Image (cartoon, rainbow, N blue to C red; front, side, top):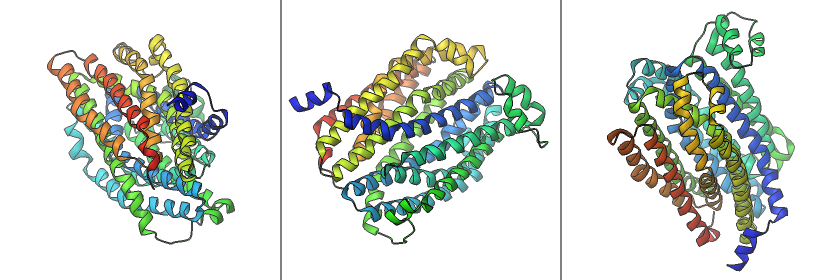
Amino acid sequence: MSGLRYRILHRNKPIASRVIGLGLPVIASNLSRTFMSLADMAMVGRLGASALAATGMGAMLTWVVLSFGISFRTATQTVTARRLGQKKYEECGTALRNGHILAAVFGIPVSLLGYFFADKFVPLFLDDPKVVEMCVDYASIAFLSAFFTTFGFAFQGFYTGIEKTKIHMNVTIVSNILNVYLNAGLIYGQAGIQSGLDSIGVSWLGVLWSWYPFPALGVKGAAMATLIASLWMAFHYSLYLIAPTIRKKYQVFAWRLNRAMMWRQIKLAAPQGSQEMLVVLGYSMFYKILATIGVVELAATEVVFTILHTSFMPAAGIGQACATLVGKFLGEKEPQKAETSIIESIRWSLMIMGSLGLLFIFIPHLILPIFTNDPDVIRVGVVALRLAGFVQFADAFGMTLWFSLSGAGNTFFPAATESIIMWFFFLPFAYTTGVILGWGFIGPWIGMGMYLFLFASILLWKTLKGDWKEIEV
């Protein structure tokens, strides 16, 4: 225990440098995605609270199924990093091919089902007819991006696993810039683009759209922009496979099916994919609870969740770097270095999320008007953003430990833990306090803080137990 206490209290500069060296490109990538989401929110926010609520619920429902694709990234990254540590380079390429097979088997049916049946499942989550109609328009098109997004997840896992996170950064930034550009024209149309963009300070985008007359598509335009950008992302990732340093070393085009490795990846992906779907479905139910309380409350939640990505996504980049190093060090039979990687990653996550959390606590009234001009949404959102700021530290612990255990090959325990807390504590608490007891907006958000703290505490106990060091992948 004294050795562990020493590593906690004293920085390991070489490993800390590796964490941040791998994490910075992923952070840049995640920040660009966050800024894209913020731009989306600012553009859609000018269409009113109903449009915000519709796109928020539509995006959440899309992520209920897309979240399963995150497990393909984790499974691919975990196996790739472990094989990198073992110097079995060809099997890194095999892990990528397996990830793409799984992405196709999952993504193609989901895209088609979402497109054709959005009008059947969206009304289950919303009551306002106007919001339902807009949400169906958004979700039916956004679901078509499921295949390209899950395909991209497998690429992310591979490139992060072989420690080439700059590729992930380049692809994501370009696709996000494309998404913002497409949003500008497709949401507002030629007639409204200049006034719409003037209100959020990016009027120069209107000049770039002056070459062709086009109609305003509103929330449907936002979904079309997402679809085109996700298609480009999958194509852009593919281009990097041609580089000799990747093509030859990892044998990415050598078509050999390794059933044993495929089964390992399925066993890694299945619990985490199920958890991600259950958790995102849980957040959809959280949205439904808030929709029951009021449209303004739902719109405020969507704005606050988007803002929270400014702290969540950078810390997730540190977590992905941590997962790679844990997997690689375990492959090299260096469990103490893997443990030190976790400690240094937590340190960085706390600095990032804690710093932003302080801004959320002290100046929420200055942050929210950037994304919406609705005074009621701002009034309600200030309370939620302040509460979220207080739980940033617990969230930093929980998120980093989730990535580290997944990188070690333990995807079941974090998956079961979060799903149980979500469905048997958080959602019942949110509904009971927010709807039955009449606490309104404040009840569900207090429940969220308790849920994140409980999750982080349990994962900390599991990590300190140390049995993750013995897992074979």
